Image (cartoon, rainbow over all chains, first blue to last red; front, side, top):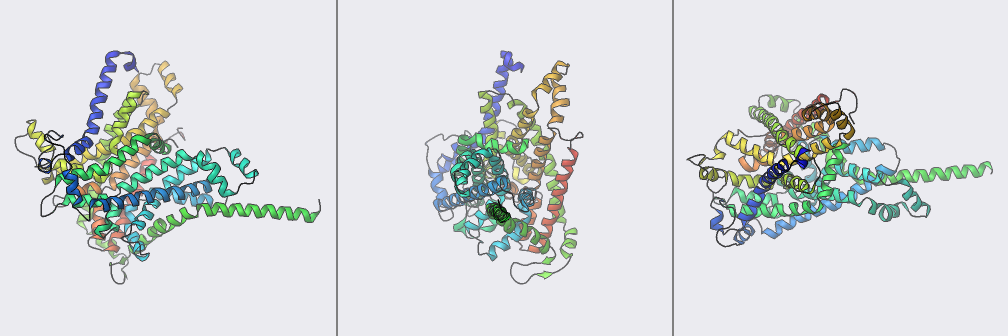
Length: 281
Length: 307
């Protein structure tokens, strides 16, 4: 409070803030700048982090030499992430609407069942998941991975979407129904635009979770050509012929984090809303 | 209106009510199906599998409590458990130690403050995989940052191989985890701080409570629920640590940084002892649920709901 009145306190506040902010961002910037160095320079300690000679994409070219080529793995990651986003949004919109606006037997039991799965770590059900996926022929399949990611997103997403629908006044819906609109039309034409912010929140969380997930991808994808980016880049880091190409690792890390950073900077408001929804409830 | 007319009307209304019930069920069906197939059934299967010798190929064999008996003698599992608990305690203290001051720092409104908030939060959205790879590079003795920077600044004469010692790995990963997750706890705690009604703070101010008292005696008790949430998320997250240890240290040196999930992973998917892995999972699950309940109980509000 006093900082706003006292100019000295205010200057100190912003000095500390700036130093802290730079400290938190530095590791990300370090990786990005170092990834632009020539391969030989990328092997040396990153002091300074920026390329001292020329700026190159050598490290990115080197990254392409791993696995079955960078673009295949990048597209695996994109397919898995977009697939997770689309399915999570559809299923949680339907589910959230159902839980918010309808009465049916066992409603609260079902709701608690879905929400309470968040208490149980998915790491403890990996072994049976592995068997179920194999039985269903979905082992080593990107679609199988998507189904698991969607399931993991559901407790949060259903909770978010039910609250979003709860916040829409019932009169709006009733007016549409009196006008003769079917249940489905009411949902898609009337309700969807009103819960759009909730959908954005659910979509960001689903994307970041799927894009960054490592353990399930490591276990359930056994063919190299199916690897998503995290699995690929961990393989890059394990090295070839006993040596690690740190330049390729830096470019891999950069590629991995850029979509997350951009998405967050653009849609920060929705992301933070998702976080705080659970905190104040 | 005749009796018959009324009956038809009632039946029709009941019909439409039934239809609405069916519609509601259909809406939640996809979600229920996924949770059933990919969560509840696997959960029950974990219990079932834990009583079997369950190889990857071939028929599983019922072995009763053998897996649990074997676990008692599994030194490496208890070593991993002990390490994981120790790691979770240190990580939670470290994260709160950084996140609470940050929350107080960014609590006030203002455009510049919003920029600081964004900066502190940014590492959260980068995946644990990417962050761990970044750290693996930083920790490398020849091509990395930490050791060469320490030498350049004259902090040490000899290069320090952080990967070679348990302490080196442990504390480097601790810095990583604090950097990566403090922003998350910060936002939760900030929300908690902001949710304390302003008039209560004002009243305390008028009654002569100083800044420290207002924080310690008023705000902190009133944000108990948020504290509980942040604490549970931090402890549960740490107890399930895997990515950073798998990617950075491979559990080394000499298995000294093996975590519980890492050991379950290697028993289940490297040695393919699926039944034993399930039994280990059960133990981890029970420990986690107990810890979560204990924390909720410790931070329960004495006078009912704080909010």
